[in-house]
Image (tube, rainbow, N blue to C red; front, side, top):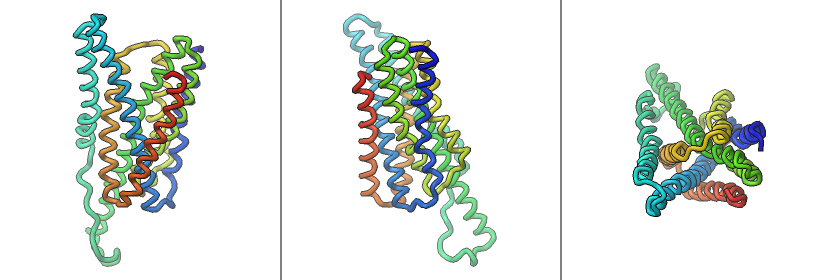
Length: 285
């Protein structure tokens, strides 16, 4: 497969993420529908968490087995192990650190009781500031999810590029189809936590580029560069970031209610991730 074809198909695989993003513009969703959508997104993210750590750990495990068989050095195995742990910490604790520094302040609670006609000017300003803080938090969480998905998709793009460069056309094709289906569900992972916030089209486009473009970029890098530590680093950071985002979304949704519905939708989202990934497994990926 030529470099041009690989890049074009890698772009197709990445930008199917835009299929789910327009749902974020719907203003008719009630609380139950938003909980369902958010927890479906958590299910997809939970599968991605398992998927990226499985790939990352397999790289470290192979290095350890290579050391056992005297094919790899101890330093190589130790270095990959530390890279896995350090990358995971950077994606989870590091992301929490950065998010805490970016936060404008703890969201203010809504003013209780009374109609808006009885509120003072200070009360109205308090409500408006609270709503603005909540909107910023939701949009920042959604973009963080997009970034975490983007890191994961970069690793997927590497797999496409490497297989295409190696001449494994059938495998590369199935990887592209599988990742395209997979990425189509990831758009819901980005918009799920937005809740009542209705993002602009510009925000959705930027989120789609952040989440989907790395597949395109990864396919180019993978076609020219084969780096096991680079691939492991992206898997590790993606795993940590996805776990952090799952915790944030889960905490927000617990306050909304509809717990039983949420757990069913989480299971459905996880299963959707499994099914789409089986297409890749069928092709030997």
